[in-house]
Length: 390
Picture (cartoon, rainbow, N blue to C red):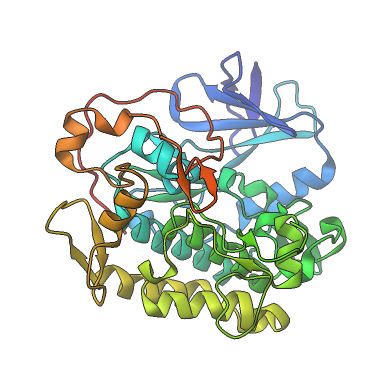
């Protein structure tokens, strides 16, 4: 497929078949340039073209630009037909190699297969780098809107990249190009069951989704509103629990849910991080302006990372000062020997590739990481230790 770049009129050839097919567009590699990728819409519209033009003219300051990493995959140039058709068909953006969905890192089952030496310190650094990217966007007036695991890529060195940026909310003078989509699991209570095409998002809305993502990273893939019903209450979808403020870790009110028996104890998180979660999910439930901003998350997560110590039994177990014993060793015992952060020796022996074994917990028989992960394309046979970067 031959298309034309807007800025210099250069013709580029898109490789077929496409790399990926989404609900709104195809993604293509570009002949002769592996540093970029092309997104071509199924149904191009003038509004999409105008939004892209506004984004290209006003890019945010990428906090990782000085290190050569792209943390916000922003549109670079618009694409048109090579026949000089005036309609914008899509755009090119940076290609981000050697990354995977953030889901594959916060989910212990896929993390053990993909990058088994990615331990708790790297998860905290991932959360910190994610907050940095959000902060950069908000500083320029942009809002992510559709916070979800599919739009965040992570490298083995804990670097983060936000993708699908053309779905972000973009201001342009008196006009706002809204973000029309969102997932209930990452949507704040005041926007549950709201038509996104009809509202303007704010950084306070993003702050809720960011806190959910950080919770998932630091709590072994457990959603902050996931829980087990107490008493005769009906099991509600996550979106409804968010709307009703059924935060099972609440210390100020009684809710009809308790933490999942397979979740790590909330105490694995630094006290200041736990306080931030309460500030977001409880105090911020009725007053969104009080939710912690991305810049505050950066500071607190830096503190949390500096407050880690090493386990004597397994140097892949990082845990916070103030805990008498290693919570990951205790968790491994609770899971029947299944270690969320396997040792170097265990990885060398290939034990990290062993399947999860279901075991009884209380009155339940549970696969501790039973949510179905996406397919892992390949499992590296030799895993170098990643180096976290900021």
